[in-house]
Length: 136
Image 1 (tube, rainbow, N blue to C red):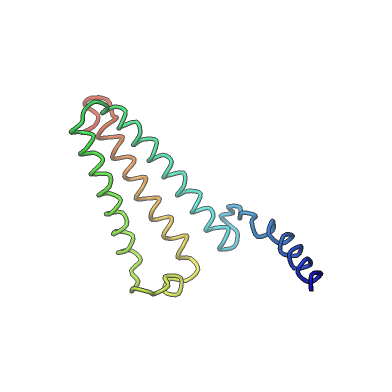
Image 2 (cartoon, rainbow, N blue to C red):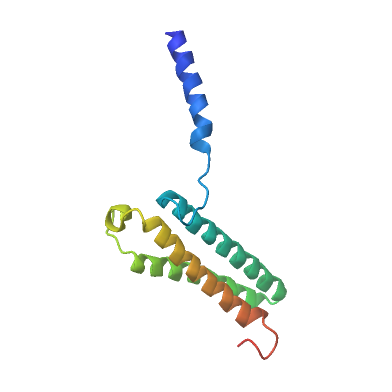
């Protein structure tokens, strides 16, 4: 019995590294590889948004009302983004969107979220970081 448990533990530990390997982006690859490209793009767009938001916060440092309003606007934008995505990919409660939209769902949703994120980044740059006369 101990040998069987030891063998099972060894087999599982040997399989773990293979399962833990990440999937590389390949735009011409299988669905999992194309999904990874979309996830990578979303991570990049999100990082750009976070960096831009941090720049805006730094620019508004000391302006307590402006900072509070910007933070409220950003929280509301996240809610709007999520609502927009839910409208683009509607599913009923407890319904699996992968059944409704197929294996392409993850890639399409990540792509749509990345696009909304890039739009928000552009807006923040234009409204808060552009030189005088080029923004608002």
